[in-house]
Amino acid sequence: LSLLFSLSLSSPLLSPAQCCLALFILLFLSDLWFLAALYAVWLYVDRDTPVRGGRRSSWVRGWRVWRHFQDYFPLTLVKTVDLDPKHNYLFGLHPHGVLVAGAFGNFCTKASEFEKLFPGLTPYLLMLPFWFRVPFYRDYIMCGGERRAETHTH
Image 1 (cartoon, rainbow, N blue to C red):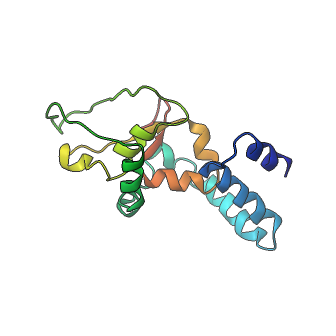
Image 2 (cartoon, helix red, strand yellow):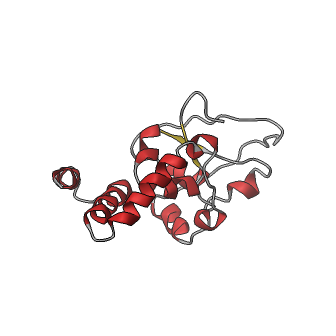
């Protein structure tokens, strides 16, 4: 529990990853501990999924909240050239780090209409492998198309 308090003291608002970790710990400490244990086994069995591309969910990527997210920051994806879908492309984004709202909003949601602007291309956002070890959060971020940033990611 001291870990939970130190995480919450570092920021007045808990991040989604901190909330997911807290939920997992609280679940383990409750009468429903067996659900957390089953999920821990699932994490082990499913450990390679983030490297292989995750579980992209069109439903999650299309949530209405992403439109509000796009309007709040505000995010705009500007197309300056047609890209051939037969090729692979690597987009470098700056600033990068903790808050990558532009990258997330444009490449992990349908709010920017990336699919309409660049038909045939599938965007993936690469993240530190650490985030794919956080219970529940890893499944949430894989729904957006995030993948682990490692040399053998394919």
